[in-house]
Image (cartoon, rainbow, N blue to C red; front, top):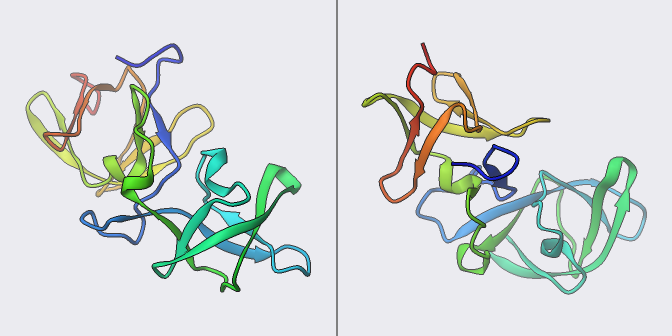
Length: 172
């Protein structure tokens, strides 16, 4: 099912703190200040390099803001400055309609959160969160169970049906 790396990829757009019916998708958070020019480190930022390019638009509290400065800082983290002041902890969002469609076997995190997880016709839980990992991302179910997002575990992701099907015997 999954392409060359034998794992599904999740794209760094979270659904944390946003309802499933919201038109807004979180692409990062305002982190600690970086320098004296109003720049800040982007926490939990999108994997899409274009998301925070100079001239790109994001939303803060529903109002549009433009990225006016971008730089890499220690640990390959990203620091940006917006065209207006922002407070630490605020969500950086975009409209769902502005997201490019994901590649095959890649999913936005917000698409997976809330899906039922089924094994051999039995619902074993619902995805609470997608946790990044060094080798692969992991689905965290409501009861805390972790399921790696790899071909050995995942038989099918059916977004239309709202269900992730596991390969038999995986949760035993």
